[in-house]
Image 1 (spheres, rainbow, N blue to C red):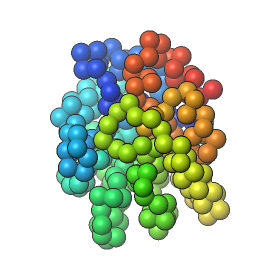
Image 2 (image 1 turned 90 degrees about the vertical axis):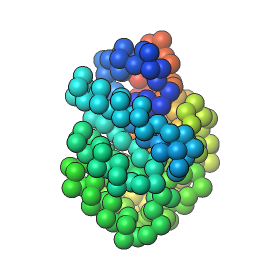
Image 3 (image 1 turned 90 degrees about the horizontal axis):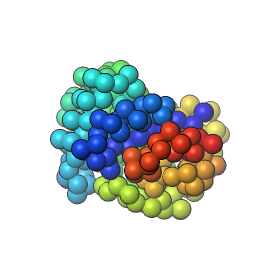
Length: 219
């Protein structure tokens, strides 16, 4: 079953409540919270994403899929842990020390959340193989992080395929999420390559019929 995680990065604030409601009614699986600190990536979304996450925690029972595009990962784990997110994902590029990677994994697990590691288009799967047995999900960026409404880079789907083959060969229970440029066409390509989770932004939040858009991703 393919799961849909609705990214709020391109959400229009004035229509936020209505769109959040329509997304839930359309039976998405998660709300994807793109936390950017203005350092790891240029854009800073810390305030608006926290506002959205708090709002969702009051009006919805759906899980939060928190994507940390930040340098101070531990600080934001602490900040979001009180909202009991289903998944917290951090970028391997933001952590240079192997010991720190393992400490972050343990910290997320101690919060009761699933652990995800994200990799940028330029990062090899080899960079995360040693951690796969400790985590639940890999998020493969299909465009460079930091902006919404980007086009999927086709070569990143080769990385999805490579990871899927590695996971199967090693009997690992790992979800593969793709993020950036996902729509009804690219979703099919990503699923064929091996993804089973789709982080989808403007294709959903800008749609006139969100339910139809969600269904088109899964069909």
